[in-house]
Length: 216
Image 1 (cartoon, one colour):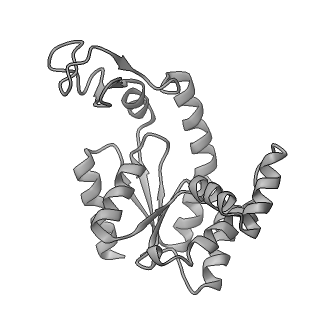
Image 2 (cartoon, helix red, strand yellow):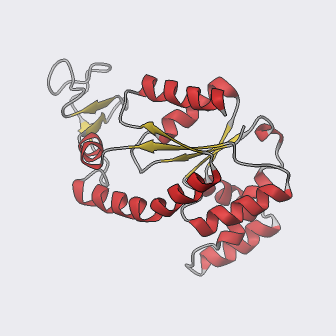
């Protein structure tokens, strides 16, 4: 089964992709990781990508799709794959579809994790972690049992990601919403788009995704 997860940064796509890897044996494919692997391997397409990146330019859609095509030849994607973060626009979606057809493959389901922008901003900007053990907390939803002390290791040092601020999150959401709206229409016309409540608790989101896949 081959899936695309759509959702803005912070919607929990990575968490759900990991669940699907464990429960269904699907492989999460990150275009960034595949690009770095192709460059490190020194493959023909990797060398082309490296030359472009060394010039400070963006790698073309054709090269990205070619890297995905090469990755699909590996045995660990035999049960299917999950794309997260690609495609980002309809041109990329069309190029992806052409490549998949050449391999007699298709996207079985596109799952949109629908979120409320204001609630997502609150979710993201309130996050922080223990600097020592990495335990995650939230200003509103999950505070330490003893204020200022990590529940796990007792550390008093906490950190926040520098990009977890309201201005940055709003910018990322604006870009996502602008780019993704055409994709919603594109996959909606193809009939394989399914929308779930991405603001639900993690187990409930997982249940919704499983229901979609059971019907796919």
